[in-house]
Image 1 (cartoon, rainbow, N blue to C red):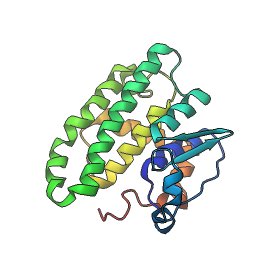
Image 2 (tube, rainbow, N blue to C red):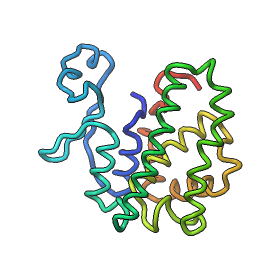
Image 3 (cartoon, rainbow, N blue to C red):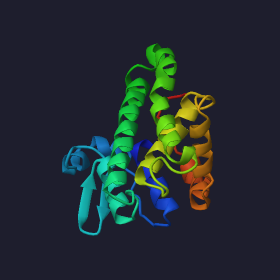
Image 4 (cartoon, one colour):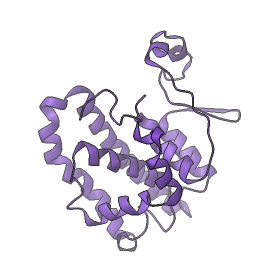
Length: 201
């Protein structure tokens, strides 16, 4: 199985010291159709927290953000966290389209346009304690995990893409060095999980 949209969730849970049980769905099981039919939107991931069942990866991230105190310290910060996460989602959709629909023909243009898509995150970091903290405020949020996942994937997709972004480069290094997150990122489960599915990068 590929890391897909669950890797930011895994990073968050690992870094926060949470335990979770994961059920991996094979392509064959999914193609049988019964599981797909049972899913609210006909897609995964599916997240179970007690008697609460959630679909949609960003809804799950927000739920965990609220539950674990990862949604900013007040309404102002919560609004900024939402804004950042929506920006990550826009970028993730562009990346997904490239990987699954237009890789050979579109890679060069994607690489050319990438700095313009990364710059807003560098700007946000600069505006928050000179880039020495998190993307919003002085405590980690669910948006940090989502952004980190996206940036780590892009360092594989476009090596060197952060070289001209001093604050983003330091941000990735700083978050990746958090002890529990560092252990997760070094684990076989993470390392051996393909980032882009079957696509050879």
